[in-house]
Structure formats: structure tokens, C-alpha cells
Image: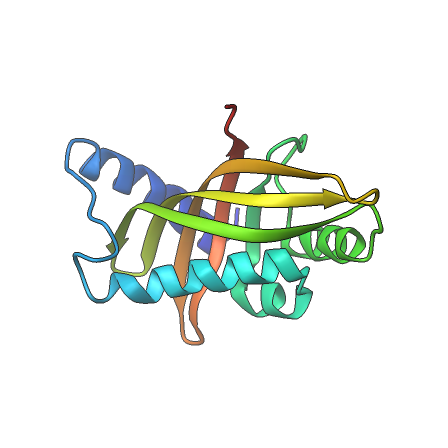
Length: 158
């Protein structure tokens, strides 16, 4: 297992155990958290556009990301291929995203963010439907800034 993956696992366990009973702050409480929410907004904008260049710059080389409906987590390379294929598809587009920050916690070189995202999908026939997902991201601080190293999302049923 790589050193970074070991840090991610230990960091996630440490964060979960240490902060399990503490209230998590919102983005408005701590000024440095605004940078994390700025990164999350950038992530959502890239998702809506299918912007693989932005994802490539934001994602850590050791990324493990598990999107809803997938059998297993994506690596960075596989995720970029999937997003590239998806953004070129003619079966629909995403629009009108609304990000609702829920919580974030930053500890040294790791940050965990939790939020809800609501967006509209327009299919190839022009029919629109609203979708809601819950997202958790783990960010790792590098010399080049914060990089997304892990995450998952789940659909929220109405």
C-alpha cells in the first residue's frame, strides 16, 4: 500500500474517532474553510461542464473516488476516462447546480467535506429531472495545494 493511501486511511480513521462527538462547523465559521468550499464549488462547476482538465489538476494521483451506482471506486485515470466519455455523450446534460455545505473539518494536511448537491438533468429528448446527491470528499494538502484524494457520493431519495 502506498504511503499516501496509508495516510488517507489513518487520517480518515483519526478524523472519525476524534471528531465523532464534536459539532462540525459550517463554511462561515472559520475563514480558512472558505478555501475548501471554493475547491468544492470548482469541483461542481467542472462536473457540470465535464471539464477533465480541471479534474486532472484537482485530483491526487492516488485518488480513490466511489460514485453512486458504481461497482467499485475509480482511480484518477479511470475517472478521467469516464468523465470524458460522459461529457461527450448526447444522452443528457447537467445544469443548475445548488451546493449545500453541511460540514468540513481540516486537520493538518487533511480535510473532510460533506455536502448535498442538487442539479437538473436534461435528457436527449429535452425532458428535465432533478437529482439530489450527498457527497463526502477527503482532500490532501500537497506542495501544489489541496488535492482530492478520496470521496464518495450517494443518491438521496425524495
